[in-house]
Image 1 (tube, rainbow, N blue to C red):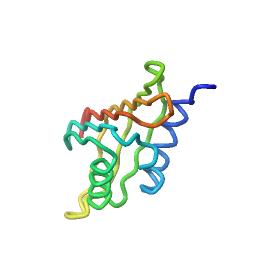
Image 2 (tube, helix red, strand yellow):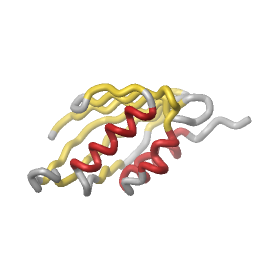
Image 3 (cartoon, one colour):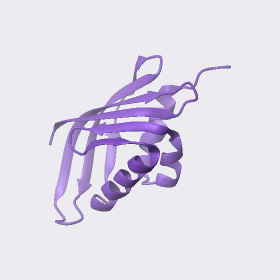
Length: 121
């Protein structure tokens, strides 16, 4: 059995996130996945991650991430630097952040953990 292409899976995750397609993003997660953001806190389990993402997309309805390159860190993790641009729904203010994200995958290719660190805003 060949191992999943984790860089391609990370790229697909970002593409679907940019499309705000949670119906296709959430199945990419393991049921017991964890997610940690330096700005939004920690979430455990697919349902908790989905609720966080729904709230995030509601708060930033035009959010878009730009990623130039994906780096295989280990056999099961990929990292990338991003620029996030969005408009806050509540205030109509533009928001731009730069950060680093690391996605860890299980043997089945499902996301087991995401770590997001905002580096500047």
